[in-house]
Image: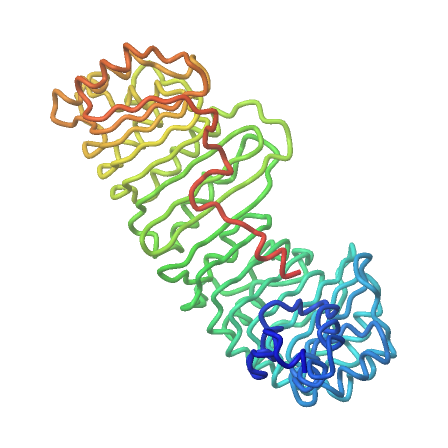
Length: 492
C-alpha cells in the first residue's frame, strides 16, 4: 500500500513505459534490466513493451532467446562486435536471430576476423524490408570482400549506410530512402567512379556523403556523365589524388557544403592547382560572401561561404615545410579564379609574407583589388604591412582605393615585429581623405607593446578604435565554420 502512494507510482503507466526511450543506451541494457528488478509492477510494465527488447548483442544464448521472445514483432537491432572494449558475440546466440532477420531494423558489424565476413555472406542475403541502418566495419589491413548481394540488394527502407574496410558490389538497387552514406578504408583501385555514380543515381535522397580513403584514382565514366544530387547538404571527401576526378561528374546543388581533406609532403600544395577545376562544378558558389584562410607549419585550410553553400578545403603537410610564404602567395592568387566581388568578410591567419617594392605586384593587393564589397578584414597573427600597404591608396601609382566599402579592421597581434602602427596611421588618413574611411579598428595584443598614444591618433580618422590585451589569438581551430568530424566517428 505504501508503494501505491509513492510519487513515482503516480505517473501514468503509459507515460512511465516510454521513459527508457529517452535515456536508455541502445548498446547497453544494464539500466533496462535494473528497471525490471525494482518491483513486480515495473517488471510487468517494461517486459510488456516489445521495442525495449529488440536490441541484441548476441553475447549470451539465454539472454538472446529471452529478448527475441519479448521483442515479439518489433524491428530487431543487432550489434555484432569482435573488439577488445566489447564482449565478443557468440555464433550460437546469433543463430537464434536468423529466423527473425526478416524484421531486422538495424545491423551493426564490427571486427577483424573472417567470421564476420562469413556471416555476412551466409546469412544476410534475404530481403530486409524494415532495415533502416546498416553499419559494417572490418578493422583489418586488407578489406574483406562481401561476395553476395546483401539483403538481395533491395533496401527500400534503408536510411543510413556506413561501410568501412568492405569490398562489395555497388550499386545496390532500391535505395530510394537512403540519406546518409559513409564509405571508407577501401584501396583506390577497388572502387570505380562509375560504381559510385551508379550508386548515387539509385539513392536520389542522399543528403550527407563521406568518402574516406575509398576513392578511385582515375575516372572510367564518360566525360559528359553528370549525376545530380538534389538533396545534398554535405559532401566530405578525405582522399588522394585530386578530388576533381569525381567532382566533375557530380552536380552540387544550391545549399550544399563541400569539404575536401588531403595530405601533401612539400610546399607545392595542390590547392591552387585544383581549386579552379573544383569551382567549375560548384554552381552554387556564385556569390562568395566570406573567406577564411589559415596556413602554418602543420598545414592549411581554406573556407569559402556564400548564402547558398560553401567549400572547405584543408590539408596537412607530411614532410618538412621551408617556404610558407611561397605557399601563401600561390593560395592567395588561386582566390582570383573565384568570383569574390561580393565577398564582405575576409579572415586570414598567420600570413607572414613581406610586400614587394611595388605594391601593385603583391598577391595581397591583387586579391583585395577584386573584393569591391569587402566590409570586414580580420588578420590573426599576420604581418600587417602587406595588407596596410595594399589598402593605402597613396602606395600605388594610380591612387586606387582598394576595398572602397571596407568598414572594419580587426588585428590580432602576437609580436611587435608584425604590427606597423605608423603605416596604419598613414593608411587610415589617406582613405579618409578620399571618402573611404574605416568606421571601426580593433587591436588585440597578447603583450603590451602597442603604443597607446599612437593608437589614440587613429581616432582622428576612425569613429571607433578599441585596444585590449588578450592572450587568446584565433588560430586554425577557431576558424569560423570549421568542420567537426565527431558526428561521423561516434557512429562507428
